[in-house]
Image (cartoon, rainbow, N blue to C red):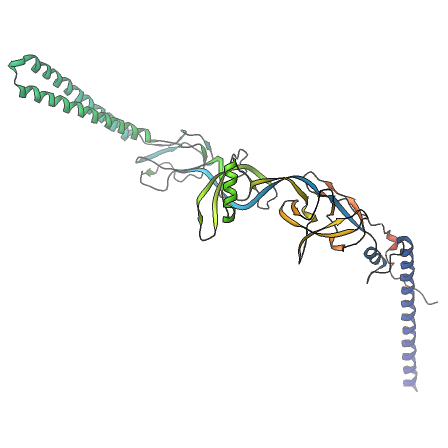
Length: 427
């Protein structure tokens, strides 16, 4: 008897739960139907064609779509080619001692800007001063001997027939020997003076000193390869880069017309660091990589470029006059190639196949498929299909030359969003 009562209670609870679930589902269905009717009334009857989700999604798929458009224009477009380059110092010099000796003092600080001829270090000059005095003394002795030999020659010549010809010839030979000795003495003096000058180590170029390679108090030798300091010239500066060999003819034509502009950009290729000119086109193509090496020169007054730095390089090879231009955001791609959505006078979109010559930043150069004055879509292309109705909004150009799209506000008020399911009590 007790088991029967328990079984009946369980059945009664299950029946009540089933009735409650059926009632709740019916209420939700009525709420959705009411929302669809309201959407159809406000949207002109376009709310029934979408699949899955709330009434707003069905309304947007079947009704006009808000897009931003911009007109196709004509303008001069630079033809650029890009590569990756390495910044190199215009000149790099390792300053070394040219004579042996004790390094007395260092006259520069690390990282100092120096000019050509500035004193960098001093080697003990006393041994070379003594050597210079020695060769100067030898010259003075030879000068005295030469003067005496010339007097003897004059006496022999004045004696005439009383002096033998051999005596005269011997005296003339001695004079010539002493004159040659004086030339040697002068050469030795010049060499000694030059060695004495080399004890003062000076900057051979203007530039920036690096880390000191040796300290004062060390004995330096002319044959040592380490050097004292490395000086790099930063103004101007060079950037070495490579381009594929197919650009060789185009680069040669551009060089024949005059200076070729080169721009150095940051690693992201967005921020311009320095403008320069193409300076060197190598005389051979690398057979291993199929590239040709080039070098550009930059003034670098603001020191934005530094030796060893990697930069993006943009070379302007030509300029297309009155090219057909659209924002790069208007260019779309599918399995058939590139295309753009064109808005007709009835505010319907057409998928127009186009051929793009180049895309540089925010600008795309269109070679065929579009005409100036046509309006192309630059936003919300993923929602479009050929023939779809749109509500176009004209784009505005920002300070950087790109497209600034106005904020699109949906005409669907918040009240149309499907309400949360409310808890209903039993009727």
